[in-house]
Image 1 (cartoon, rainbow, N blue to C red):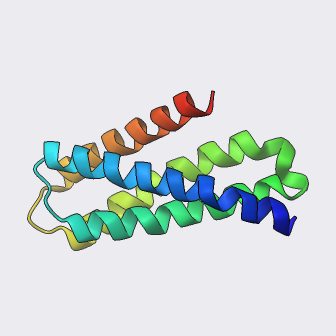
Image 2: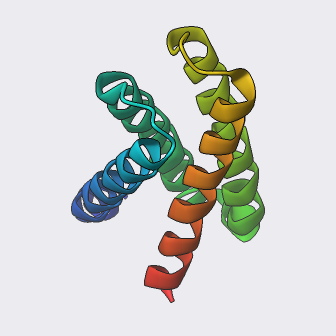
Amino acid sequence: MLTGIISYLPEAGKCILYTVVIELIIAFAFKINCIKIIVLVNVATQLLLHTVILIAFYSPLYIYSNIIFICTEITILFIEYFLYTCFIKNKSKLLLWFYSLTANLATFLLGFILSN
């Protein structure tokens, strides 16, 4: 199990990097310039996502891993939106919602495309 986790770390790191870069590009398109907040929020939620993936993969929950993944992605969408509304005060909640939705859909779809 430990070997599997260690071998997964480079892949997780690559995914985290891609996610942060894509979400920053989308943030600039939405005129959101809070780079530190976006990076910290995304690194934190990506660590959560990859932890859940590893737990699901190396447990009896493996047969439900796709459902767990989708539920975790949806949960992360709401976590990110909540954190953005707490820390980015100069943008409307509606704009932050659309940013969160757009950025998470974009990174989810890119991840889906790259994994197939």
